[in-house]
Image (cartoon, rainbow, N blue to C red):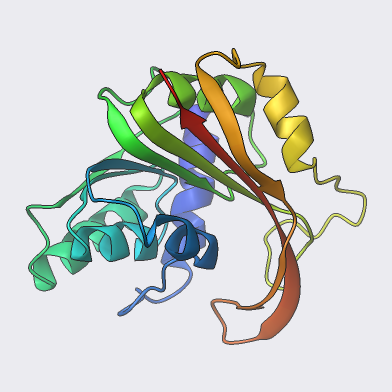
Length: 208
């Protein structure tokens, strides 16, 4: 499937539901970042924009990237409406091409899953290289399938955080794993349903 198919799919996912007036930040982001000083952040697959808006509201300068123009346009409008237009730069970006330019103190990749071809390991490795010293890469993956997920394949396999870290094969002299676990939580889907889900959380810090 080509890039046009991917854009059409993800534009359709967002266009099929009304714009989120107050998108919520992801729980693993807020618990990880709450104590960090603000800096430059990159939100990979920003979606409705809850993470980008939460970060910007706490002083971060955020580049929010998504393949869907619908998601990007909605986030841009929300940021302006909240007076955060100078702190949130939402861009349509295909991660199958060059990695977004810049050096970052935080790169967040929440649920960066897609039914289309994407070398996710290469993307996350590029993200690690895009960190400044003491910058963090937060990768949060699905560890279970929520009832509202677009992927309801019962045979889908969810790699562990340790497996993701091993695939990245980062030099331990430059990057260190600060967290790799699989906590559970009660999540609320876009349609208001709730369910217990498992997150696979990997936090990597660049030490040099």
